[in-house]
Length: 330
Image 1 (cartoon, rainbow, N blue to C red):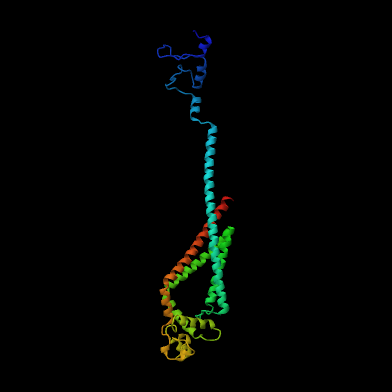
Image 2: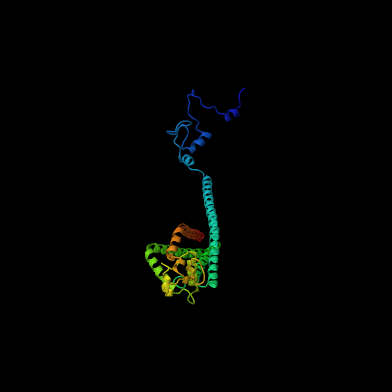
């Protein structure tokens, strides 16, 4: 069967290798496509088709190396969304850490405040019931156990209150006040401990002289705290006098000691012979007791320092985080 002319016009046979005419038709659809690449197929200088190098025109170069604008917008949107998600995740983690630290600091300072209340209560109870209890120094009569406990409890309560309110309210000014006050206390403690170890010998001599002066106030009116303190120390530590039991001879101007120095307590037993008295000096006995319990004293000191350092760290971390947040949202 012969194909119609319409079929022949629709389908075109590809040129074979045996064909002598390799030129493409100058008109039709090929002419339209060749104009996009700067010339006709087979006729342009240096050009080729299917497998051979061609010399593309500016439109071909632009379409080959330039991506559509829509794709650019999609890539930019994806990058921006990814950065936003990372930033949001980082902010959430920082916010969770801040909340955790806030409640930890609140609990820490609440315990601190409750401890201060307890210390203050004990100090007030001693001041009311025992007077100036444990006052041994004649140079510093107000340096009694009751007054020390009252002062310590008050300071601890103030510091704990600032930390509690500053943490739960996230008030950076209260946190800064808490940090400064706690830092001052910590530095003062370091200075006192350092000076104590540097001037240990001088402190020993001064303390013994001052305690001997305080013996002359024993049993006198208005010095019930000093009297009770010496009686408790000599009874519990089984000692007598500051450096020797003969220290009491200067107080009574006689061979006599308080009844608390007796091996077996009885009324006016201090008037008996020295064989019935404790012979150990109280100053050295207390020092030996402190050396034997030095580990406990050291652990207590280290725990106190650790608690203060943790408080300083939490306060400054929260303050810096809130300062950054205020700056970010300003």
